[in-house]
View: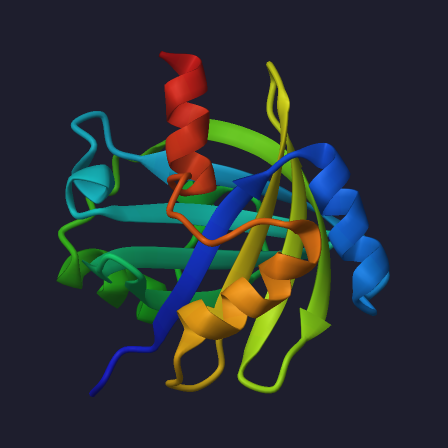
Length: 183
């Protein structure tokens, strides 16, 4: 069975650029999501270029396991769960994912931060505007998440041109940025 994939481009921008983009496109009403990330003591998930998180939006909890396929593509396995505590998950599908990717039961929380997200639906992708608050700072990120194959870089650059920015990979994932902050 093919695994679901996620293809995205992302770029960090200044706060003023972020605010201008929000005013230029008809973004959705913002919502707050808390992202709690987990890994084993020997960082087995990180070594696979992946991340395991529980995202909480209101009373809804979504477990996501991402494993890197290439520079802009991840396998993305996702399921709504009824707990914020990863050790209480008994779901057989999630257990099978953990077995497939050799994720041990001994996993611990490694980071937590809050993102205020707004989205704009493009023809071929979803544009996400994320303000993320870490324990030590706040950053502003624009993500371009593909709905279908197309020349996403050109389309993303056309959107970014409204704020005088051109796409250049300048940021790792949010969890990688959280790790860097913690080091």
